[in-house]
Image (cartoon, rainbow, N blue to C red):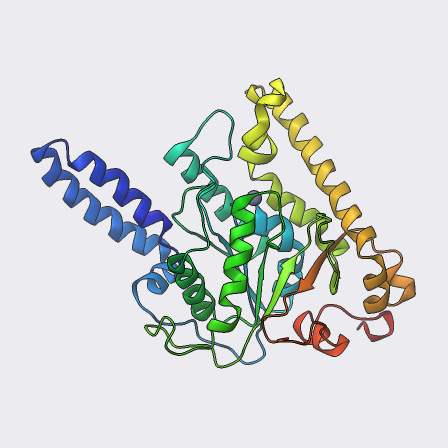
Amino acid sequence: MLEFRNNYLQRLFFNLLTKDLIMQTFLKHFLTVLCLLSFLDGGFLAAQLNSRDVVERKEGVLRIIAFGAHPDDAEMQVGGSALLWGALGHETALVATTTGEGGHWREGGGPMALRRYDEAQKAAKIHGVKSFGWDIQGGEIDASVENRGKMIRAIRQWQADIVIAHRPNDYHPDHRYTGVLMQDCAFLVNVPYVCPDIKPLRKMPVFLYAYDPFQNPPFRVDIAVAIDDVVEKKLDALMVMETQFVEGGALGYLDPRTASTDPKVREELRAESRERFRKRFVQYADAARDKLIELYGQEVGSKVKYAEAFEVCEYGRELQKRALSTEEIRTLFPFIKKKEEKK
Ligand SMILES: [Zn+2]
């Protein structure tokens, strides 16, 4: 599931290896030590990587896996829900399907990939989730059979009940193809002789698209989650992603302040980003208002300020039956309750 750290470093060092024979011997040993350290550091992750084992399912624990194209997408789309699941003991994994190394205006390549990987790990600590990253260059993921296999294996390894990704209607090709990959996996995760090196899931997960504002076609809100109780924590997690939300990401050059190293300027940019996100999650709540009222009741639903929203992908458990019942939604999102049901 997580080959990013090992593969990236291997590539880096093997490039160097070709240059000098003496250096070669030294680096080979260095690399062995590095991989060992990486294994110790990775612990759980390395175990997942080096075997075809799957995580152990615990009774009553939901397992959610969300794929975002870049290290920040899944965090933006499901961070609040992940915190709410986590508070009830359910387990979420966020996977960045690319390194996102093109996502900065001033720096690029490996160093940016590593910075963004580290940011995702820091955000994961705040969100209380596991964070994984694939070693595919930002801007270059496609819906290949190889990448489909990667995603099928990740979903099986995580023993997912819920799988989330972008819709395939999105401005960014990495988002689009990550969404297509999820669609391509939706049936195959149950098929034994597709990726036969890892056992198929016995139960079909529910596949969901995370909210986006694109209009062609418009997003259908099937599930709306009030995130008011956790929004500050979600914003804390997003704000550690400084390459994007302090330094402005790929188009940061449009604001000359993003080049500043002055802590005061950086703080100002951070505060502006936080406010921008706050407004964005308010817009999501407004877009999902009807569903919030339906799921939380008129009194609570009409006052929810911040939300996340999801659309059901019809290729998963809901094969040919587009809508989940309210009861099914409450089983998968057990924190969604009407006021009178709140304990
Ligand atoms: Zn993205």
